[in-house]
Amino acid sequence: MKKYAQFIAFVIMAVFSHTFVSCGDNDDEPKITYNNITMDCKTTHTIKGDDSWTSSNKYIASVSGNTLTAERVGKAIISSKNNSFTVTVTPTVSVFKEPCLEWGASKSRVKSFMSGYTLDKEMTNQLNYKGTGSLILATYNFQNDGLSGAAIGLNGDYVNSEALSEQMTQYYIPIEVDESNYSFYFITPDEKTLVLLKLASSGSTIIYAIVYVPRSNSSSRATSEDLETIISTIGISASGNPSEKFNEMKSHLF
Image (cartoon, rainbow, N blue to C red):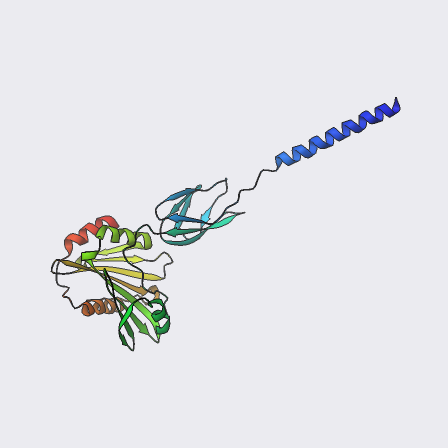
């Protein structure tokens, strides 16, 4: 009888032990894995879980609750108390390729960046490149042997203005309009570069001049010099009136 009781006690203990272990395993919820993601600009993504999230750059990717919005082209780190992942935002339009914007870079570095283009003219403080297709030219200015400004000129006969406006908003933050000079001002999401988009016209052809200067060297003189370089190199008169196209773009940009 005693042996029988001991056997029953052993079975009961074994059952209880198994039950407690099983309950413990069930309490362990599976962890959510957060992988790096790539998103098209202006799209959204739902983040799993109940964490509170923040973005390293809200101008590239913003977070509201568990909704992630791809604002502009670039990379941002999305993080919570216990997790993080990187989001890469890619453009959905491609009207032009950005010039080299590595401020302080040497001429040799810029030449390497522009290896697929034909160098048209080299001066002490300037490099001019011939364009292809819609790109009329690209020009770079240097101060103290370092890159201090960049600009490109686009031929409006080969450019869809709506697509150009869309690319500008996918890459840059609009900050100001200058109606008297048919100009738009932007800043890059990292806030290191100021961007000027100016419209000029030659007869029925619209010319889009996009000028880049470092924010730390953003004097109107520097911007004006780069812009004049484009106009003079193109060899056109900027005395035309591009107001109709300017107003179309303004309604899209602002």
